[in-house]
Image 1 (cartoon, rainbow, N blue to C red):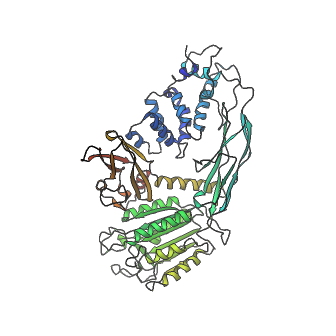
Image 2 (tube, rainbow, N blue to C red):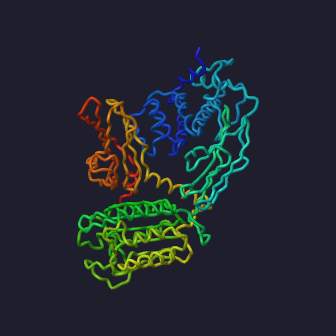
Image 3 (cartoon, rainbow, N blue to C red):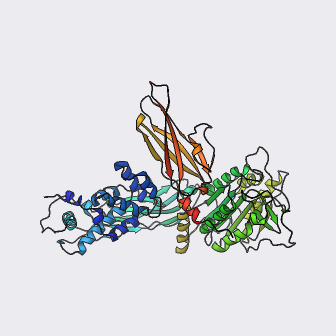
Length: 624
């Protein structure tokens, strides 16, 4: 006779109705620590279940479906899947699957002999929580029913387990440096109730009390929080509190104004095919990205060295991030000019005698952005020359900006003048002044006035500011979400931005010839640039190991910031927009045994699949 456990081991995932699997898939469709990525990680750690090609294929919106299909093809059982689902920090997916299977058995109305505890969205009873034992009732004929029956008939609880939330956490607005406190209170049976706090879907380590305390709050603590509640013993009951938004304020605001989100598009063109190089721009964009993102809470799209078509693609992506009531910033550093009040931004492939049709007309594209999202503040920073382009005829008309209110233009220089980079200086004059004042908690116009005063000290150029902003808005204003529409828009922007900046988890390479292990790690530098590094985790006894990145395998991508000229262990790879499918990363590995003088060489190529590539290709415009 089969035991309960052995019978359940025979239930194949392929026997489970697709409707139940679809609900499980919806639980796993997130990038948090309780999503499909963590499930795949545990499957690989223990059983090396999927091939590299299969793992690469998971980097799509259909990833959870492909994972479940992979398990079905391998004839894995429900019990096998549950054993891994229980390893996730949030066990809602495991509980939901177990509950759905029990509800399926109940709906057949064959073998129920005792009432079952009620189940809700966050509470369930399933086979993985029932002690082994033998049923005294008539056995069903179908193997699936038999397993469910054997597992479920062992329950003998005198009362129904429950969790009741007595106090929900509330939205907070805290200043940087202050303490953040969120409170959740619950009662239940059995006791005590276990608490676990999450931020943006990720479990917070060591935050497992009913009060969440964070001392000296930083901008990175801004986001959505909730607490996951769980009863201590089986049959398990789980609940989740309301999700609340915590806004972190840089400094006390001069007014009660706030934003629904903060987004920025930054483009820096340094390497021109037919025009002089501008070396400071690559440093400028990194400095501004860091300040806007880390100090002011902006979601930044940052690109270097874009062609005309790619600049238009960047504007299309930017429009997807702009929503009603947000603050948005646009920055361009590179060659440019101004004709009839309109500024033209020069792409990297423009000919030396470029004309209007070779360039991007800034005001036109930014007006499209503003119409799309209706931001409450639009700051436009143009680090370009504003001299007339003699290659274009003069229209003798002033066709300047037709923007409505809430827009501020800050030019690196005045009309008909040039913008400069100081020889030997890391940053251009305009950005060097900007980065000193952007985080000042005063009205944007007043902040830019301080920038103008700073630039005057250079005795080279004078900045100009034009504004239709009538309100006292600051870049330091907090983000506040007051309605469902604003919350939905914020989360959608967050989803798009995270997809554009996704990088895979570190990849572990094993070289059995010398008992060595090496990791390849990836970090976003800009939206179209990634830092790649290799590190030795383990090397055989007495063996010398030297991993390195093969920089000559990146094709037409730009490789820079290498840790060394020869066989570097880290480097930055830019212009990811040139990729069509994936980024091939080739790692070289040199090793030498103690008794040998000759080095051995191995190579391994990892195909790095990035959601950015598909999103970028989808945004490519058709140039008329």
